[in-house]
Image 1 (cartoon, one colour):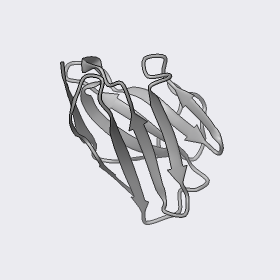
Image 2: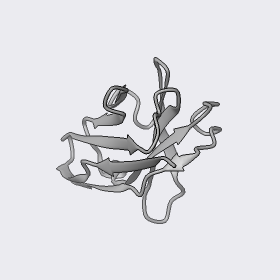
Image 3: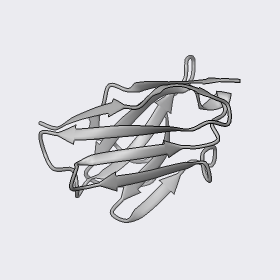
Image 4: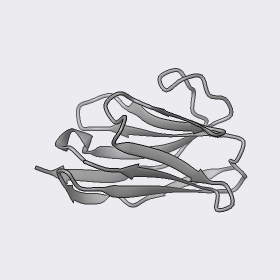
Length: 121
């Protein structure tokens, strides 16, 4: 059974940066699509980035500011977040899927427990 554990969340100032990490264990996820979703208080969870083989995908709200990457040797996925805005504040979740069908259409098979990102204005 696979597990995903996020880290790297915390407090950042608007305009600042954070890098989230997602460490996978229990199985090899190199053939899985990996993604990051976020959920702010009172809002639905939204997928913001995904990586499937060498292709990356981003929600319009983060395009140009966030970068998703993976290191299969370390079984780890990253989300580099630059130029953070107060609207980026949320709990960020890492997820893995056997198949990728688009940011809003993919059914994620594994989820981490999340890491909190707070952005001060």
